[in-house]
Length: 479
Image (cartoon, rainbow, N blue to C red):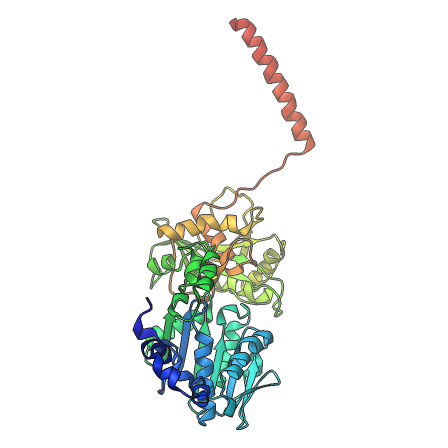
């Protein structure tokens, strides 16, 4: 049975005192139907106060959007809200969820209506509609109440900018942010909002719940919902129980590993330091980032990421940063040549020469990366033939055992580690760190040398000679 403390007053009254409900006139029942605060469960009610954000994170059907829509209608009707804003994953979802709930939950005597992409009320208040697809549109706006809806489905590459811009624009009057979401995978905006609540729960209020918390959901609906997922699976826990995970289901890294073995300072007994590059060719907005990790190895064999120099950069910038690190403490640079070819080598040579440094190219794949020699930069290229997921498995396993770790926190790198799934978009930061660790740990891909037709003929001839020799030895030995 549902916890009585979580039943709405109207729902409880209808069960405990049904004669009261039947005694109401038609007019009274019509008005009572729109006293929506009485129909909300306690956890659906947005509290009064001077807090900054209020969020609902729960399973499907919890009643998140309905509760927030009721609150915004109340604020607009009593004059508390004069400049609201709406944001959902895209324009369709703004209309299908936010606009729909605001219109349907507004009473006939103060009826909201769809207006452009947003909503307008009888007193002239207009809620502007925004989407993460155009994160800059809200940059210069001024809102006193913002509703952020279905954050879980905001576009991955734009959601953080969208949140930062609209949160900054929510700065007049009460300046409060209302948000709702389910959970799926790792979402840095959701994680940030949860972290704010953890640090300051009075100022950043969070309500969590499951699909089972709503007594108005039919049993047939719940049965169908539950059948969609395997009980106990991650998707079941996210979609129905409203749980949040720090990493995506298929990620090779877990946040718990990164946190458990994290170091505050670099060890003093580092045996060697290298810069590992996954080069980029451009700094254009749609170009891949350049992956650049500074990786060291302690004398006990532990591999440590000392810095993440990655970013959307021109080749000159990442090459200059790599040379600068070699002047400081790195032995040299390991770079992937799959896409950039020998451009990184040539560029680093030019910059090194300008700095008065010499460059030595390592051609022996079996030779360990040399110790640092002041004035010299060692260069080694790798041509990866395995996919990035396969290459990352060994380094990821090292993290799980504490054989690899980070000095300090590298937010962008760690987000990529805990959200990237093999087969997804190329993870440049992750790849640079993984290949640097693999190099220093002796896990680097072995090159596959393919034989020429002449090699095949030679091997076949040797096999024939061996067979003849064995037959001759067999006769002599009486076999």
